[in-house]
Image 1 (cartoon, rainbow, N blue to C red):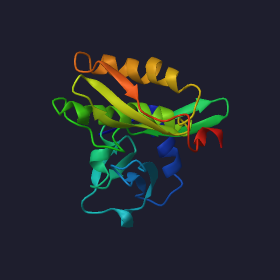
Image 2 (image 1 turned 45 degrees about the vertical axis):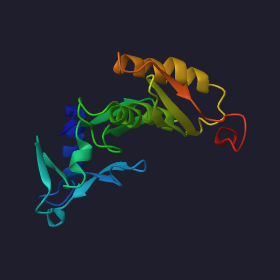
Image 3 (image 1 turned 180 degrees about the vertical axis):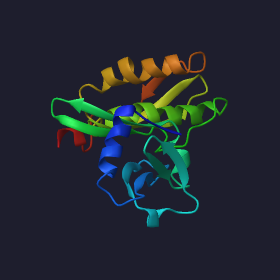
Length: 193
């Protein structure tokens, strides 16, 4: 369900050594399955353990996940990343905003999942997002940009060299292209704020 790198495991063991006996970590999702989903990690003292929690044993501690968060943490990873600015834990949960769909699910569901798990996390770093409006009968995905992408001068590059290129590879033989229906010329553009 959740993989934790050895560096992150060592970090948790060190953090937990200063906590009361029996304290473990809890991994959770707030607002799971929504665009506002947020993942987190916290201490989990023995008195906070629920009967329905999923226990994931690691070397020196357990990670506990509540039953509501569990399906949204499938394929999640926790790592300890060191950069010039310091060291920090990173938690990546590609299914937090939307449950993983089956490989044989309808094309529209697989594309919506792809957008939520692969495309929007990258756009979010610029305050943007994209949503699938429809799949046309002739095989085109119709999308609409929002947030920081609305009115951005790079939106065509993002669409053609990023989103469309990825989607044509991922959905080869099922999708002919991606078209943007966003009106980038009028209205409030959050990109310029």
